[in-house]
Amino acid sequence: MKIHLMEHNIMAKMRIFKFWNENGDEKEKEALSLKKAVMSVQGDYKDEFISVEYITKKGKQISQSVKIPMGRKIREAAITEKRRLALKAAKEARDKSRYASN
Image (tube, rainbow, N blue to C red; front, side):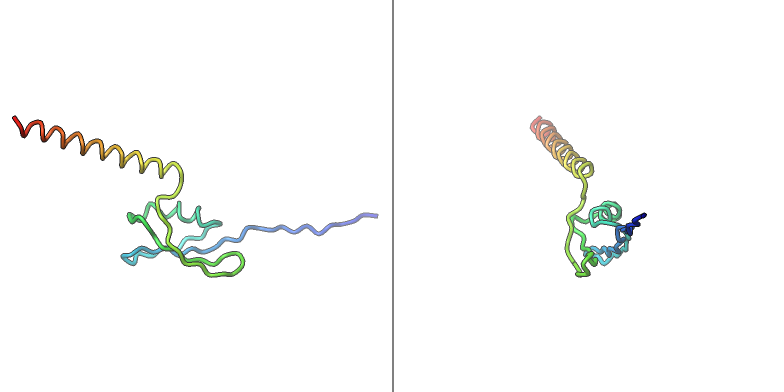
């Protein structure tokens, strides 16, 4: 006697994420998760925060703001870039004051 079990092929649901910024630039992205969607569109926006709207797996509509850049490598690169620019500005200010006194 053979017993056949029903196998359910459960696929992850692709969701549509709608992004916009304060200027009104809008983008739609279809992705599995919020993080993946944000990481794919964050290069298109130069703002610090973008707003996103989507529907969860349970059917609840969510609208929230997300801080970008998101992702470890990108965040670390942004931090080191800020630090580098601050050091450069401090060095230029120091050099400028040194030459101004002569």
